[in-house]
Length: 327
Image (cartoon, rainbow, N blue to C red; front, top):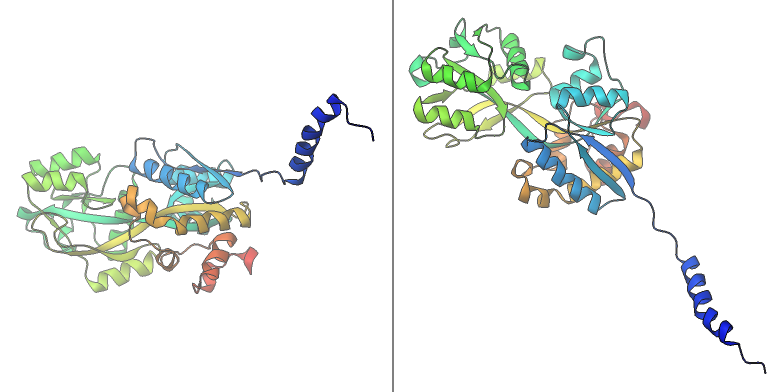
């Protein structure tokens, strides 16, 4: 019997290793997903960075965030195919899809919702010494509708128009509005955000505020006219010595277009909701959110991949949220 040569003996382990390597399937490449978010200094940018990390770790997706100007810019970029997903607010998603409001004659018919990350609450507050107790009392009064160009300003205009109330809107930045309330130059101001709003807390400490509360009839009128808004409550004690107030809220979430693959949207949605409690540990606004709440507060058709996940976990999805490509 012929013994193997030293060279053959040296090559034998290498050949075996090569054969074994050939039997192992190569790791699947992760699909890259870019999310347009908001200014890097914002709390939303931090929160979306956290959720991107969690989704990437529990899915075949490699999710990254991109700094943008926010919801409006993201909707435009989604329509142009410049980003895969984007932070968006409920009014922006609804109007972009329907071609109404700010998107009149410029509809993004392929707009699809994936999920809502956190609620954002409208605050309408006045000085306690102003004598104003109801929304009707704001008729003709000098009132700041929120920061110039912000989502709160837009929502305030829509809500007051629906209610038939016409304050004398004083348009300025949030910091200038806070100073104007303290100085008595305006009766109050508003903002859309996650309570407690720092500016409200600061003003309240030097010039006590009263957060106005909507009646049930006003809530019904506003939400019928503006289906992307829903009733919510600012709990008692959110601001020192203030009772609970009924107000309106919207949601901040993630949208895509029908161009995003169904599998990618499904994996993103699944990984997000399976890790949402962990997200809430580092990004408090996400606490208390669920897939059920997300679907219940959606007025724009869902992405087919998100729809598949919601149905898979037993959520009954309204017919109006089923996109054309999934019917």
